[in-house]
Length: 78
Image 1: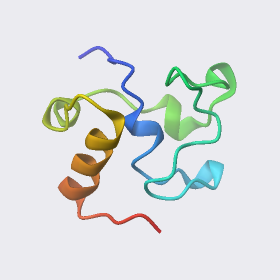
Image 2: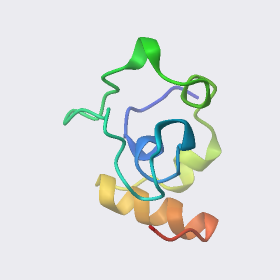
Image 3: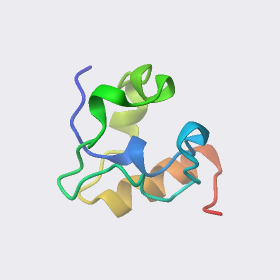
Image 4: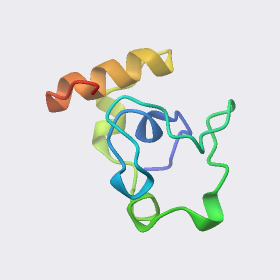
């Protein structure tokens, strides 16, 4: 599966390597939902591969996708 560039993986989960909390946008995520440190991003980000979860959380807005992701995994923003 190809990445759709929806930005959900940069908002919904925590990314401890960047000190990012659940539901909080990554400080390196641009307004166009692109990584501003793509070439230097941490290993956890480099290892991410789009999968069936991306299809399960598909929605028109980033806010809706994040809410679906959090619900799917039973997560709550800190």
